[in-house]
Length: 270
Image (cartoon, rainbow, N blue to C red):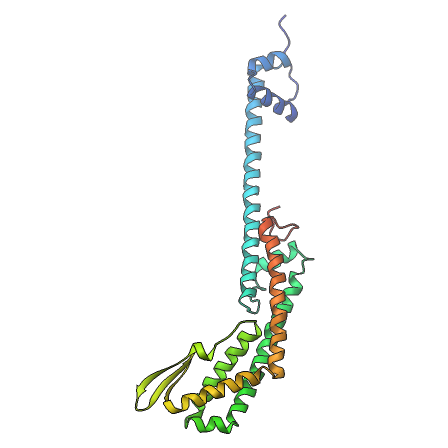
């Protein structure tokens, strides 16, 4: 009688072993002879093991791509948040799903406190700026020297308010601001009139002989406003905001440079 062929059920471990042996050079006939199985059984199970491995590899590839895409989405969103902070804008991305996702991934991150503080600083600065602007207008409207410079004082007041608000905004952030010796210029328009420009701000059709008085007025107010409590409050707010921007930038860098966001969220592929 010939050698009896086993009819036992082939388990998945046996399939994988046959596939491994087959791929390193052992033939299906040799495997069947050594293990006592029909060659057709061995071939069928080697094929099944190949198919199962291919399906498993395909699932892993899909999962890997989905996970990489998810992390990339979170990193891009973190960069958008940082961009808004660096522009000193109130965070307007809280309603987006990726906000929820990032917060679920990093519930203990200081970012969420930082973002709230950032919004508070920006809102506080807007309030201080509005208060300062009103104080400036009131002071200029009551300034008799300013009234004598131009008959159309309303246009001059608007010019001076814009200039001085710009200067305080620059100084309170640590910048030099506009300089009268470098940034003030005039353009003759005829009939003893000039267009006066200081940085990006201008007054048209001003009497040429009044430019010096305007310059003196700017010099005086540039010195005075630095002593105002409102300006000091503006410096304090911008100092706090500047520190906060650095802290937020550091935390965002940890997210984007790692490229892998720890934790899980509702939208994770896993």
